[in-house]
Length: 102
Image (cartoon, rainbow, N blue to C red; front, side, top):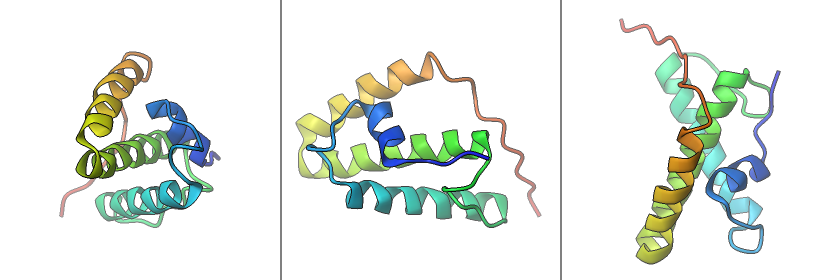
């Protein structure tokens, strides 16, 4: 099983711990975890999840963090989202999540 860390999220968007505190990233991790739980209809724990779930939670938390930074500082958020996630998309394979619709 895999675990998502604050450093995983920082690595995706190339920021340091001085730029964004752990508490802010942990908040985004929890929100991403809940989003995935709702989509899959099952409980997810970002500290004990599959590799695919880890990738999804990490990237979604990074996007949410960039969005929150964009709202407060448009110059930081946009560059964060555009450059870092574009680089990551070239190295990460697509998510393979199966979602059943009822």
